[in-house]
Image (cartoon, rainbow, N blue to C red; front, side, top):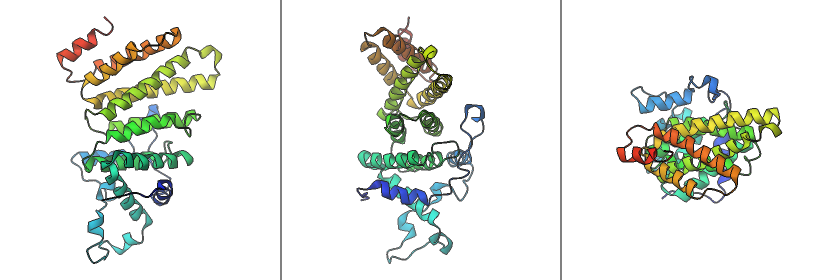
Length: 298
């Protein structure tokens, strides 16, 4: 059984330092260029579709059993044995197998996130997106719930490394959106949790927009961009829920526990109303769910 050392940060540091040069990682994630997918996103699409992936795609990394035989002999080309990038990807492949244990994969992912935080690698040309796309695909191929990665990453928006860095928060939301677009539809607690946490961020952003007059121009601009990014991310995640019911339950809970503070109550209603609009567009929603949604604001 795979196990992981206590100091995951040191292991992740070595693995990702050798993963690949930090250049040419991903195409621009800016909303104006979202129509252009990165090479890494295209590779994932190839794997999921009918086109053969390139030799660099993560899923082509062989298992450890095929790399080393029973005699301890290495069964890979000499060129690969001398390539740190190859061994780095083998390590990442083995890390993804730890997804069978939720607490362990959480430790691994949090170490990955801290590495990206410290190097400011969530940007459009950073290392975060390609690594996490690989990780997500490997988790899926191992038969585990890939949405756990999304849920943990959304919670990372509140991490002390991130919460006071607005640009990094925006970059992370854009990475979450890109990852979500490449995930599969699967009803799970993890994806509903991700939706719930993002809805909370949307409410905060709406609250901030009510105070525009007292904020600086840069903060106003950032908040508008952040709100738009969170909104788009909610749309993408809602498409992966597969069933409107759990999301409607979340919305019901928010309204049942609404604050008595007027401004917070207003922003909560605004966020829930937007969530209702998003969920209303979900495909294959049963008549009973549609009836439940229709009663929300009727």
